[in-house]
Length: 318
Ligand SMILES: Nc1ncnc2c1ncn2[C@@H]1O[C@H](COP(=O)(O)OP(=O)(O)OP(=O)(O)O)[C@@H](O)[C@H]1O
Image (cartoon, rainbow, N blue to C red; front, side, top):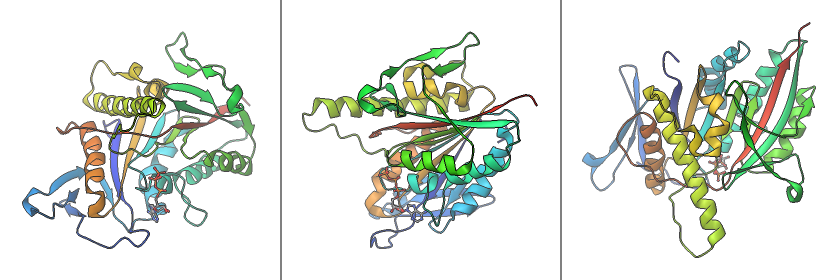
């Protein structure tokens, strides 16, 4: 992580649902560097190349991603460092597979929880809370939806940002976590915070087509669009060492301010689909990553919804 606060990596998912192999993209590895080349079938000379510190191809495994990218970060969590891991990409690009996975191919969240439990001492307790950001307002998902009040985002005297009035439940075992987790997975999209480890599964980004005349949907799209766009600006500003980081411009970045800033480490995973059909989405996602890396590009993103799930370990003196 030397010096860089947010590392950016890419993962190309395998072909699914009868998709045919085509020459949509390939990974080039040269002199210790790796690049994703997004091909332009009409004009090969206009293919686009995106450099990444780490690229994972269609045959990558959940295990190697966890071992290479995530496990070293978990090792520092108990030493007090905040780590935030984001999965970003369009619908069906593999975000949920990467973060959550399946029973036979568990992803980052269950592996990270397992790793956190295995490093826990007798004096550590874990509790969970979870919340949703919807139209830039925060709701408690442990409270019945109809009764759920908007939760205020506050700052304590030390300037630490927190979500006030949140319900949290203690978990004693990994099974307790799995029970809570299986409930929350019904909710589609989530963020997990394990103490000082935040695992963030952003909802699908897609081209921002604000069509139709459904005012509520348009408000939703535009709030989501803004929060992702601000996230890009925050990641970019952190990487640049800027003096002003625009955390306050959205609830998502405000809540993650403590996680993203200071001495924290981050990993942004860009999930992409392999075929030419997804070419424009892929370019949008990689542009998002590039923007964070200060490569000149434009960003147009949209996102459907956002849920946040938090596990807090606390240590007590023995
Ligand atoms: N690395 C992978 N290996 C095997 N299958 C994968 C992989 N990545 C994605 N898939 C499969 O591709 C499909 C879409 O992936 P996934 O549901 O993770 O996408 P998503 O980005 O979370 O989409 P959405 O934003 O719509 O929730 C799923 O059926 C998933 O199992």
